[in-house]
Length: 146
Image (tube, rainbow, N blue to C red; front, side, top):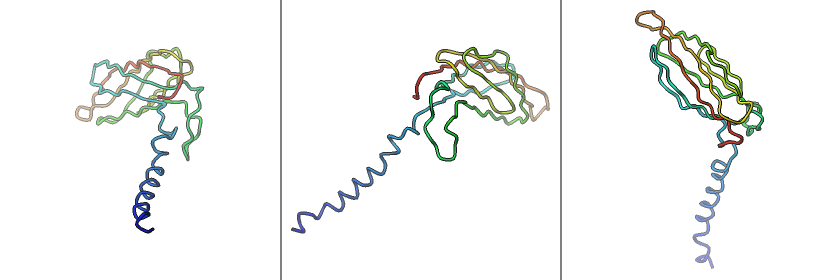
């Protein structure tokens, strides 16, 4: 009789291990609500970035220690140069944007294609001269997590 149940302990451990991993692969927390393509910006250059965000009216999955209402998509941009300043030169039509220091924040209020442009100034650490460049954000506001 013990011969018949010999492999069951190992099988049971494997099944329990696989079941413990299931929440990581099927969890709603894995859903994406915000994505930036990213880019490198040089003096005098204009670059285009893609931003994909879920419309603000869609609830976000609960994450311990974070508020459930997180409608803003935030990109932190850093430089080897140091000080940054941002100025919004083209405002979005379907949402809101704020740009300060190293941070660009966008909130999509309506589903559709949106666009905004930010002019960035940063200090060159070698010459102490100011560099300027522009980032055009092409935004897709979508109705559900991706």
